[in-house]
Image (cartoon, rainbow, N blue to C red; front, side, top):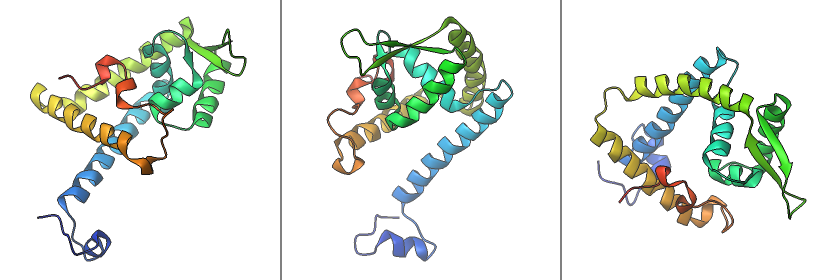
Length: 182
């Protein structure tokens, strides 16, 4: 179905119709929600969650001194969200905060040995859940999804309506393994 130029997509959608673009975006949202729900369901068995995994993973993967702001930009969430999660993780001894050597306003984060053990347990659940979801996909199909979602992330970085300013993370700030490969 061609993209309508004269009809509001609201009006189209209200009439029970859709566009390829709307359907594609809805499917992406549903895939992410579904995967996250399944992952969280499985992680609850080990008293963990995808939000905890994301924070711990970002800290450990970013290498070197990592601030809470760095983690928030990486995860594309508000700083307060990371602060609340780091509070919980540090109370459990999974993350350690230390003062920045030259900026007293900044805390640097690192995953503790206990946190690394927990994250390894989380990744076992994540790896099996991801493998189950992607088992029917070829390597080429996964590469195509990676390419397309990378292009979408790059486009989001250029959109002024995202609320991201120049201090926020751009696709180029992602670790090399998360970026598009030419």
